[in-house]
Length: 330
Image (cartoon, rainbow, N blue to C red; front, top):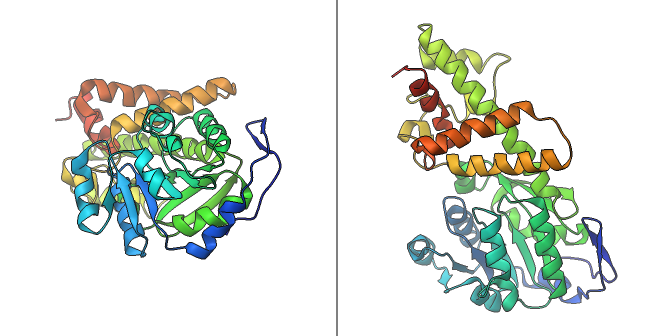
């Protein structure tokens, strides 16, 4: 599965010394061995279910025990903490809300690295600071394990249908091993480069997503105020040059589409608080690289205001409702 790799590897410009990856090469001969899964929230739950559906025994944990019930009923083994997962599985996927959660899951008192087996493959699908991914990779390498960042795009719908896009950063020799698992949960698995580049791609994508959702919401709101039927306007946009994912797949206007959060009082989906967090990551990296992102900065401000106005736990497409209320449209 993964090539036997000896010698130095570079993570973010830092050289880490010789690690024997001979253990990793045996993964291809045991493709249905248990897979650990840490984090069973809106995204992690359906991802773990897809691994089970593909025949992988899953050993899982979550800080909220109630989040484990569904996968347990489908056959997953539930344990108390990440260290116990690492003790029982040498391939682990983590899907957590933020950088501090990832740091704790890997390096905390009951973290993965307390019990990790030499040669384990650790795949983090959280969206976090690329610098944290590099730190986790360095810590894992000291324990003889392999860490890769593999954040996702596509939302809860794609997670449920197994059509996520994974953006993978890490040692290229390990990509095939990671892809074996990720293709059970996604339609697209793209190698981006060294550790941290998967996060870089995800941060860029989510900044554009936020900007696009705000633009779609403003446009739909304006059209409604001008007397256009929202379904008709969406239809026109989606056959015209203004078409985008936020207009044709995830429309923010209630009643325009079925099966999206806007049709369910903006429940489920991708939370406004998480979008604000991702935009904060984009702002930090833009500052560090001296990259001008005026629209990204404005989007960050808007989503932070939404969090302060009671939208934190609503889907990020609720920016349409936020704009309507801000302008006295309701």
